[in-house]
Each structure stands twice: as structure tokens, then as C-alpha cells.
Length: 128
Image (cartoon, rainbow, N blue to C red; front, side):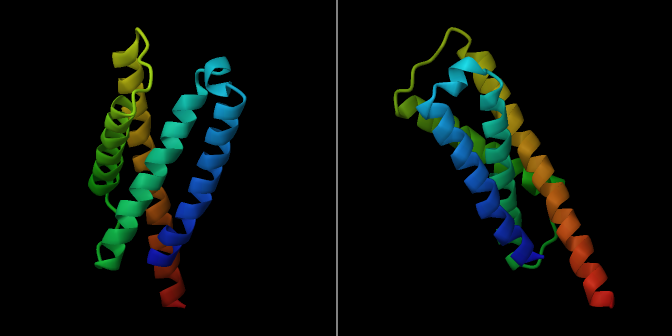
């Protein structure tokens, strides 16, 4: 299970990096406002997978609480980083930040379902 959680992370990060770099280069975040939500969902998936992977190394199964918490904490950290870095804040900053964190957490929940798929797969392989 832990290998699946580990090897899924770079795939998510590569997709996220490609979307983010293209969005910055071609101003896609400003043309397609929903694209930021996809980026945050993928970021939340990575955060959740990362936390679940570390916990799997300690022998714990993936749980909704830890996927949620990992994505939430890393998402809050990202929002703080944006403020510290001096990124411009729009008039709808509170709504935008709330949606960003919501999508981070949604990504963390998706990560839990991915983790549970790996648990089922490793359990079925060990029975054979």
C-alpha cells in the first residue's frame, strides 16, 4: 500500500506543475477562474497522499480524518505563504481563500479514497 501512495504523488505533482506553469505563462488563471480550483484540488490530493503515505509507513490505514487534516494544514500553510510572498489580494480575497481551502480539503478526501483502493488491492493480492 505505501508504495502505491508514494508513487501516486509524483504523478499528481507533475500534473499540478504542468497546469500551474502553463497557467502562469499564458495567464490562464485569469482567463479561466475555475482553473485555480483544479490546482487546489490536485494540491490537496498530493497533501493528503503525502500524509497518508507517512502514516502507512507507521502501519496505519488511510482514514478520512488524516486525509482531511493533512490537506487542511498544508492548504492553510499555502495561503499563508501567498500572503507572506506578497501576492496581490483581490476584493473577494476571503471568498477566494475559503474556496481554495475547501478544494484543498476535497482533494484530501479524494486522496483517502485513492488510499483505500491501494488497501483493497494489497489485501486482495495477499489473499492470492
